[in-house]
Image (tube, rainbow over all chains, first blue to last red; front, side, top):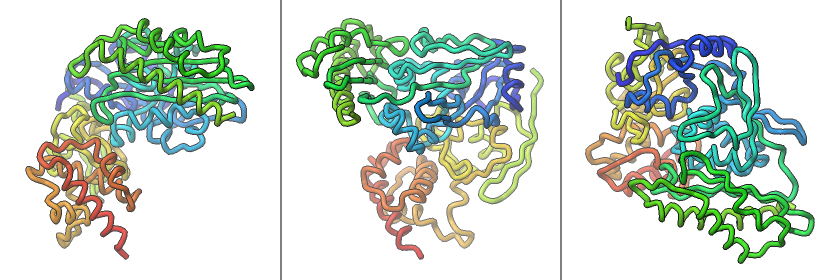
Length: 292
Length: 162
């Protein structure tokens, strides 16, 4: 055994899980896929005294959508189900790019979208995807529910807006828009390793092919996902011009403050963030044309 | 803290086991120490190396990242269940033997479990797909080349099987 002792409770319903969390507060952790929490417990970096297992709560898993409406993903939906849901990948193509970068098949069979976003690892792909897609995070406690924009949900290193009695229960992504293209790219030392830098881009064009909206978010280059959409403001209303992207690249590089690690210096992370931003915007732009 | 135990019932390689387990027992340790199925190896014990890969309801998972108590009611497969009762090796095991896909063998049970599940889903993989499927299993001896050869050969055997 590696984890420190804890009390294990399999929640029988969402209400049961939320009541337990209200009772135990910060001493308790929800156990979803466990692909980040259990390693932390094995190292005893995390020592919750109560584990509330929510894996039995089928109501928290699955994708719901209706024509033209937002796409609602239950927090307990595993990466594997998203990867094999072709309609979801068509509606949210950033996931088709990003999911294969998340660890390895064995991890993706267990890991969940809600666990990923609640954990808020700075190098994780999905926080950047959620910020770029302007996802809405639906949070519940025994007292009621609330909704937070992804850009306000991630507050710092492994820190989110979730309070000690709350659970992230659903993530809502906007309905697909016309003339919109997306792209996610990252650089890691090996496939499945933590990203040294990653970029998610969402580009919407008008009927004449001018950029009408550009969302840009980065992972791996700060304490949490970075919303870099303002760096691309100069492209709005403009026809496609590869020279204009150069400005965006320098803006992105100026606004991030990568920490550096054993695999990459801050300068190298800044460099690849710029290169990836350039490539991801270019690819998203071209996909927007095809999506026309 | 008082030691808290939970009664669990699970199937491993078709055999039903009933045990009382402490909450914090990892599934990997439960298999090895409680059920004495020591074919499942533990390497890093934080989900990186893949040595402890087993099948949970047919899908490969890291058994070091799951608690034994969570396996209650599930069907598991481990490396002990791969060969036939008469000792005939599974095509993936035979191919690893034929192509010298192992040296020290520590990573081998994890690779076998990952790849039997993969080849069941995709019996006509490209070399690239095999390498992608192997990405979650570390091997420090072989350099992977012979493992890849073995998997491509195993795929052929599986396709040719009646």
